[in-house]
Structures are given as structure tokens and as C-alpha cells.
Image (cartoon, rainbow over all chains, first blue to last red):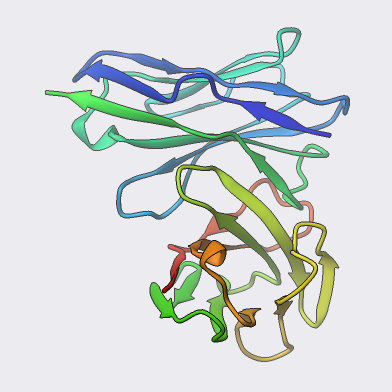
Length: 116
Length: 114
């Protein structure tokens, strides 16, 4: 069975600084996908970034990058140059096999607050 | 280019009533997924449907919950005889292909049972 662990219930970061949100996962599958979603206070789920288990390079999307360490089973999200609008709940999720969005397993989330 | 449309955004039901949640996938998407988010928790998978077929309902409660995705019209998540514990946000997502990387979520329906 797949399991996602986000150990930081809440994080604070100063505006314009970088922040890392932790995510570790547990799976016996070799092929899987890792996702990060943002959920602002308005409630919608916004896709941020995807990393496949066979991708050799870390995924990047604008100010978001995914620090993928396969041996440690971690997929941390790095947000550079934080903005006030980044304040939200962030969820890490996993799907299997890689590329199949059939079912996502989500972590419990990290509430990020960006301070002015 | 409308996204995944869910309605209503908010739904209040008394205990014992039925709740119907609707989801219209993105244009061209034939795969629909329903998730539930209890307060202070992450999303939990409920069911995966294609047109007229339930592919995976391993996350659906055994009783009172059902889902459909007819040939025409939106996907419906139906909860019969609602109880307080059904209060949650219900999210629908869609994707164009079974093997697509990730999918697009709707804005969710917040169900409150009073």
C-alpha cells in the first residue's frame, strides 16, 4: 500500500524567501508519480508540479521545484521567492503506476503562511 | 475553456435526506474521479468512472453512496440518508486518458449535514 507523510502541519516563511515543504512516501512499486497541489482558503485544488519515478531530473515549474530523492523516498517542494499569495495548504500526493492518474493517495497537508 | 464544473458549491441537508452532487468534466475528458476531504485532512479517493462504467470504487463506503457517469450529462455522486459524518468537501476531477499524468480538480462541493 502507498503512504504519504507530511510532517509539517504548519510553516511560516518571510516574503521573498525560499521555503521547503517536506514529503516522504512509502511504496513497493517501482513505477509511480508524485504530485503537489495547492489549496487556498477558497478551497479549490490547484495542480503545481509532477515528478515521475523514472524521471532523472528534478521537475521545475516556474517558482516551484521538486527535490526528488528516490533512495530516501522523499519529494520535497521548494518554493522560491515566496509571495503573499502562496499562503495556502499544500498537499503531496502519489499515484501508481507512473503516469496513471487512476487513484491518488494524499498526505495530510502543510499549511504555509507567508509573512509580509 | 471551462474547467471541471461542480455544483452546487455548498449544500445543506438534514439528517436522513439525500444529497446529489454533480460534476461536469472538462471538455474532451472521459474519465472522472471523486474524492472526499474531511475537515483537517487530505483528500481520500472514492471512485473512478468512465462513461457508463465504474472502473474502481474501492474507496466508496459500502452503503448509502453511489456514483454514475451516464453517456449524456454530468457525473453524479449520490448520498442517501445522510448523516453528520458525511459532512465534508467532495471533489471531482477529470482526465482525458486513463494513463494521463495527474488530473484537473473542480472547486468542490461542501456538504453540511444538520
